Amino acid sequence: MLTGIHFLLTYKCPYECDHCFVYGSPRAKGTFTLGQVIAVLQEAQKLGTVQMVFFEGGEPFLYYPLLLEGVRAARAMGFNTGIVTNGYFATSMEDAILWLKPLQEVGIGAISFSDDLFHSGLEENTPAKRAMSAAQQLGISCGMISISPPTVTYPEEGEGKKGEPIVGGGVRFRGRAVEKLVEGLPTRPWQSFTECPYENLRDPGRVHVDVYGNVHLCQGLCMGNLWKTPLSQMVREYRAEEHPICAPLVEGGPAELARRFGFPVEPGYVEACHLCYLVRRSLRGRFPEYLAPPQVYGEE
Image (cartoon, rainbow, N blue to C red; front, top):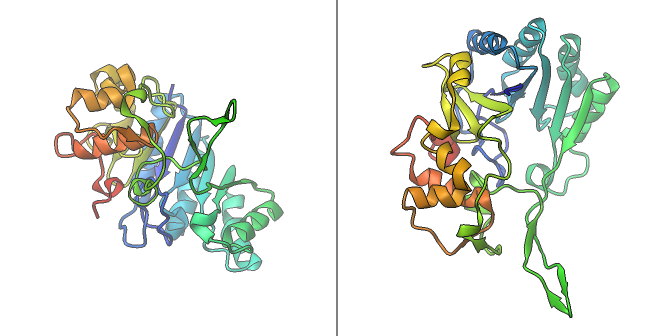
């Protein structure tokens, strides 16, 4: 049951992190109009199940007036609201409060701040930390999202032998991470990836919507386009078994997706997302409506 709508308010971002799912960068273009945001919210209301509306990016604070009015509109319609941001705007505590107070006044529910080595390097007093302190002063519920770079550990198997290497750190290998972070990491046989470990494709609980109208089940894997089919209709009519990409994924994961379309597999991949992303990227020409936008596949 769909309970969450996440606006990818823009793909533009001051940062260009190696682990970014959607290839966010300063060069990305475009955002919603306020009218488009309200139209999506009205469609979400028609479903009767959506409770939470998030505003994300890219970096949503780059379009601050739209962000503020989007939160105001969502609250007026009865939705709980949240934001995900890197807090770049918090050049000082005073400025952070200046940016956050209007959001507090319109009833923002929660803000998550992204702050880790990918965003800030080894800097200690980061904009995200300042922004989070300001949010706490204003009584806004908040938290930190921190993703560590990939690490490799070898669990003990007994008798002095090490087990199979495990890749840790929290990175999911799709988007720019496939280009920047997989080199040298241990892999597992492609046949072992027999399910999607992160998304419920049969009965999605959330979707992301972007400025181009794409309704993402996972970044770059789309249910359809809401500028062509109303969101409420699309969600009600969605059947994973009838979707050209989701059908093999729910049947047998990325391995079945590769098998179904004759993808020329390598012996191994770092994890399920790694294989799934590469197969999907290879199929973009055949299924442009369902594997979109080009931005998410590194095509600027």
